[in-house]
Image (cartoon, rainbow, N blue to C red; front, side, top):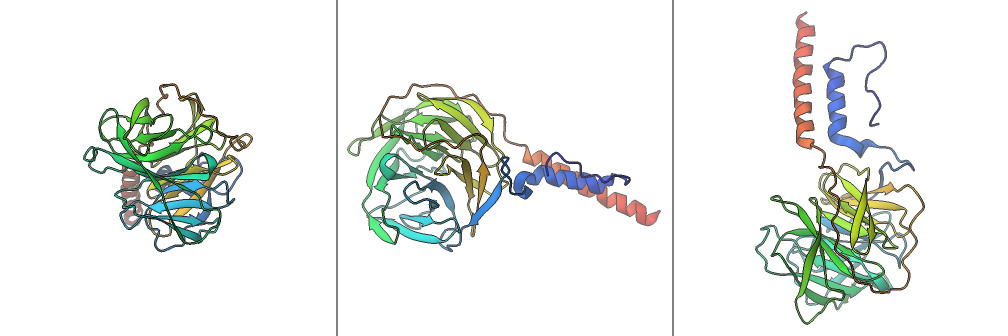
Length: 336
């Protein structure tokens, strides 16, 4: 486990131990056992062979133990409901929708689901992106639904984004962008979205490279994640403050995160065939479900910048160096 010495009493440390320590630095919490102290534990493995690029994750409040996900490619306008065993319970098709790069899904008030077609791998090629809202089915099963489309533009120009957040009380929509050139931004949409005109989203805070995010069920907390990190923030009137580090699992391509329906834990997803979803318990009492919607305007605020993501490239170099040291150590022993 992290923090415990890898050396045995009475034996020489040697390069072998250096290699083991380096591997722990790289792999991090992937090997962490199940625990109630914030350590990640494997929740389930997605079994559906069609789900190969799970890019978003949203816990259902209407159907306990059910999670909504989707692919991020253009294989079709499909959203999948999976249970806590990773089995697909429903495939929902959005009628008349052609997706370009769907990156996130979020649950808003009144069990309304939002699918975000907001990816832009060219980081500025698309002048506008789209959100699709539809009612979460009361009965789970394969079906086709009608979705409302919202056109979205950013006040400061096109950009790539992967995170969609919908406040569970006000219904206000937020998007977190990412960029390899500068900081990402948290964008706030209008107080209510219009399906007849373009909706302009304005930056209200700087954020790091974000691959997903979400609100707690009562709307008082925000989680943002990157590939190798996650931060939990307090949320009040459009301002995120007091970031706390979350012990994220090590995943091949960490793409998604959602609060559990009771707010007592976070679930982290990734892309790939048979991708794993991990649960991370949160300290303190679970956040209660959101009360009835009561829209209030948000006030812009700056987010404290989290510490930089772990330097996995540096850790990898450490592994390489340790392997080399182990080779020469063994060679010396054999020739001695």
